[in-house]
Image 1 (cartoon, helix red, strand yellow):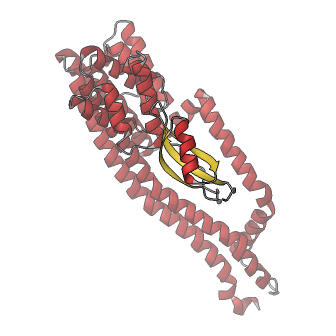
Image 2 (tube, rainbow, N blue to C red; image 1 turned 180 degrees about the vertical axis):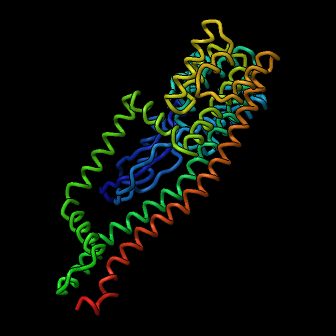
Image 3 (cartoon, rainbow, N blue to C red; image 1 turned 30 degrees about the vertical axis):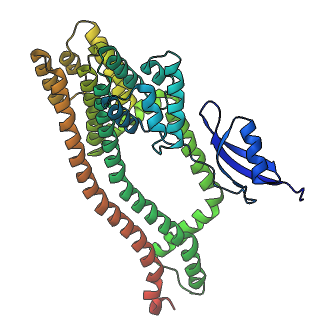
Length: 402
């Protein structure tokens, strides 16, 4: 009988019903399985562990509160109890991060916490506005309807964010590609032509000589230029994250740019109006809703403006009156808010404003893309074409140079 042991990888469920996995040593599969069963583990998969353990680092699952809300609302509307809904969702082939979240929520709710309090313990998934709306749903007995509204709001925010990123991606890739080609020409191609031009007895054209000087300067400083740019970028990123005043200043400068500034402003107002409409229609008091909606605007400049609205309303002003004192809020939003306050349909008016600004964002994105693409192509064409012309200009004038 062989006494050689092998390493086995196993997966199963422990006595508490939690999925577990690991590795164990043993002579045979049967012996290893018997040992795991004695530990209270029900083995679902057992195999010889691979000797090659190289693998890419696992990526952390991305939080998807919209998908979570939609699934949970569907199950609750079908009459499934909350704890059982968590179990059904965890068995439906969800991501590892969502499975971990569901186990945590199930444990907290089973221990006596409300769903809103359990959600509040997971700030990476759920913000304050989300938790407040869930709490309103629990208190009013309309949790499934609140979750559906939250799912719709989050899906619209995600769609808006995706449209902005998609519109910016192609021009950015085009710009990076063109600059990379220009750098390659300056660092690799121009020096080869320079060695050819060294045999000429006469001076090179001024444009060609300027390009050669630029290539030499770039090559001589490349050793510290690239690290300096990386350090500067990291420093700016840290300053943006840690210094609110830096974020406010950058956002203020961005809002002054043509088209892009209008796009950023409309996107922030769309998020603000959509979130405030959802919170107010759920029954959250307006002052409390403004406090939780402020961080969802997406930038610190509009966040501060929303908090100023709350302060103005606390001093006795109406919402539209407080808006009128801040230039970040457009006349259309102010007028719709005034109509909503006077007619008791503030949530409907805010939802209309949100839809309007979302449409405006789509139009601004199309306009920005239509302007950026030909402008970038033209700039890169002039840049790369100018380098090529500079290198071939002495060859075209070869008869005069030799």
